[in-house]
Length: 226
Image (cartoon, rainbow, N blue to C red):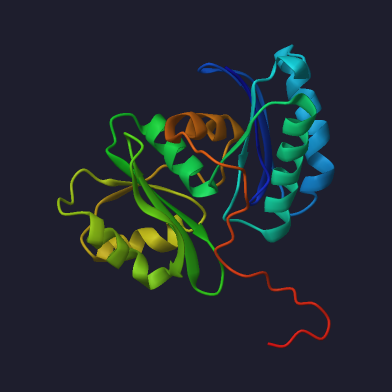
């Protein structure tokens, strides 16, 4: 299956063309803003590098969040528009599941992975997934001090070591160590578009693509009551 996969939800803009299990082309740029301007040219480049016409695509895969309010909307709006224009399905997976799937694929033999992304204000976005695709912790927002408790609730045997991914790993790893958990930092900090496609294939999401907001946006309309 030919898939165009994109991510703009966190601190990067990423696009990839995947056919089956082969990554034909991919590009990844770290950025905190400017996703809307960067995405379309990036997609055009990877399609050219892959030597594929847009009409040959069979799916558009996109991260739905959690992430920045603007970043999420940029990627999802682009995916929806492409899907409508090409008359193909748009499918979505979360940024956390994408990072966990990438960690599991790169580690080889690991039983499960924990994705933790910095949500600011002393909070983190958290999700955990097994190598077989079972969601142990659904994507959620929690105080960083509660991550150990969430892990303890699902782990009876503390071996093998936990695989960690996401921007909050440096803060979370010492907390887990203090609770007696061994953990391995995968080094993955942002979703990679190629693994957006892999995660969608592994997790088989269904239904329309919608943004996943785990926290209300900070911006308020003029005159809105707090």
